[in-house]
Length: 230
View 1 (cartoon, helix red, strand yellow):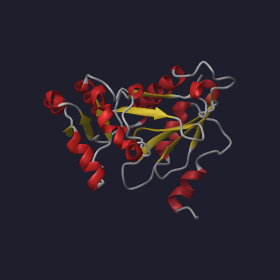
View 2: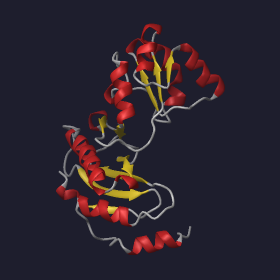
View 3: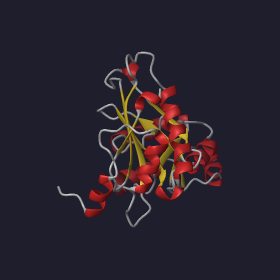
View 4: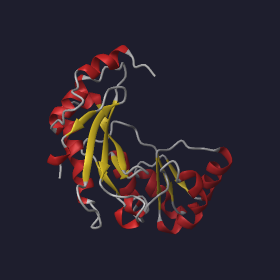
């Protein structure tokens, strides 16, 4: 697949073999972000763990200080007495069985984050097969299974992101938009990286952060010097 002229020009600015400091990498990604839309800046972290083992899983959530730049639509599964609380906190949708039915019958997915109170997990368990593959199933580790729905909604709207390993032991997460500028993106980068380092499993041996790449939606990846990250 041939790359476009903008990508080719941008790629020339990046030394493929070089490992950049985080600040340099973010600055270079912004310099090579040339699309006509506000590109998302993403972080890809390869970890020295084996996600097939339960004791080497890395998963959690963190609130980025400057959010992600994306408007987050939230669906809250809760009993009737908490519906108004969820809506007052900013939830886009809140309820119970009626939303389970809507998802099952209408293939409805007009939401980005699903939050549930613990007493609703039995009800939404039936949705595991459709929510799971999309990364939408509520999880206590991500703070999306909680009795405090107001707090969970507020954090989701403020830019809380979930990080988890894929099958190749890589974490892929957005850290903002190109329009944020270098300073805000570095703040978000450091916050996410700090959370991932803190989540290092006791069973992990050897180098924990194998590689780290920052990239914009349409631009080339820039390698960050993982040895300086922890």
